[in-house]
Image (cartoon, rainbow, N blue to C red; front, side, top):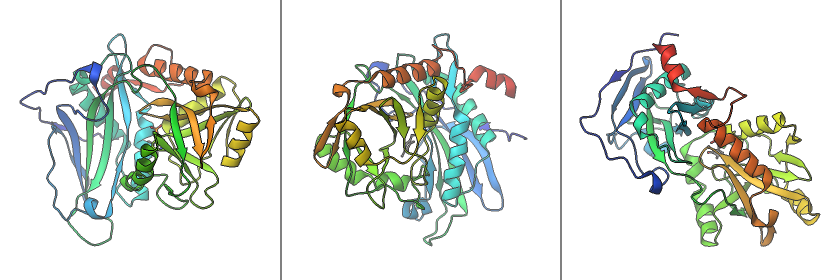
Length: 364
Ligand SMILES: *Cc1c(COP(=O)(O)O)cnc(C)c1O
């Protein structure tokens, strides 16, 4: 494939970098961003890296009214020898195209997007924090920016990649969270947009999240939208249960977002010969396992936290305390292995990591 050239306009000034000790998620952004435009008939064009700045949009831009927008989330790490490493970025670009397609938005060229990302990170590499647990969060997204109040796919779009240095998810080491099983609100139904990373899914989840927060729970566990019986996922994480030695996660069914962390964990468990199943799992089954003393561990998986152990699950007032509210051994082992592979402290037997210096050499 021919990679279209990227125009680069560097910023005249540089922002002060945040203190890595007190970094929070998604509040500070680097000096530059990548962007490109799309027009029907012309395709994607005007690839450019420009100073990070607000964008001007027509108030009638379709994204504001009908939510035609998708996003991705991944991380870059700096390993002990200074090498910049990306975790499975091609999976994110592939998934972005699935989301784009679901929202009737034009697909991006995955190779072009990876090339743009590599270039941008090369320019911003000093923004990648090196303190243990910190990383550079990467947020690619596409919006419909055509000014039109009709309900129809836009004819104009803009693609962005922005970067944000983020802190350790667990400041005092990995620790379990309390989760409320959501019986009233639903996130997605089969045939809807639950499988796509699109804004509306998150806006519609806020109400349940707010109610759970008021009751002292950090997240909600979504159930299937039809019977409110089967487990789907948590916030922006997929969910795993260890029951009587076997690891179970809900099968991808059209309403669950297929996480790249989830996929990686399935591969790791298989590699370790730990029995694992992707299937439907009901709350009744979980309660039965709990009562029989067979519910060993629960954990969520996603790019932000990597692994998030669940210490308490509250289902309609019935509280299940998992592994004495302590991080289970499997959650710990998965967390350590994945983060060690991501940061280059451990070998990567799956070829998940892309080292930036190799990528740049390929492009040169
Ligand atoms: C992003 C996301 C996940 C996790 O996906 P990863 O690729 O592992 O980060 C899970 N569920 C939802 C709803 C998400 O948006």
